[in-house]
Image (cartoon, rainbow, N blue to C red):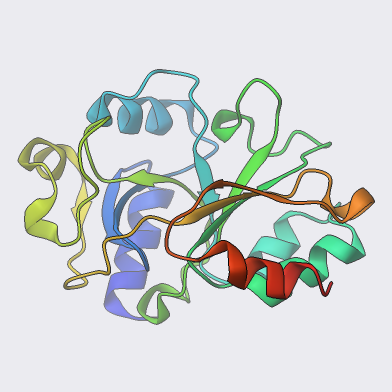
Length: 199
């Protein structure tokens, strides 16, 4: 395990909030099952309580192990798309990670392509490391100084691409094969169509 991966995992397991490099922009991370940690992260961002966030795993294998109710068509889609610069909105019939979910219970899933953090063995609730409504940070110096001061750990992964993840609604994909782009970002819709329409 790399030094950064070990530090991030210890921070999350200890109930802390971390600034870390994803494969798009810098993010904030905390334990998705700790109401206190999630509350701290939202307070740091100035994010309204109850607004959904994504749950991030640092490897596809850990994500699939944590979501055993995922059907075969969805598993094939996840294997084809991840890791990557995507946030996938999935059905969540078992109500996993409720602190990260919105009122409809759907789960936002991220598996970034960050080799230095691939050995992190815990899931994190993650959101971009900016104040609500502010620009997404591409480097540590662009992260608001108050966020950096309020975090328990700040990891510097150098400059990042700066375009946020593409958000894809896969809530009916298992049953109907249908999908929709909710926010086009780092991955173009044409690339998603090439992959998903063949699953």
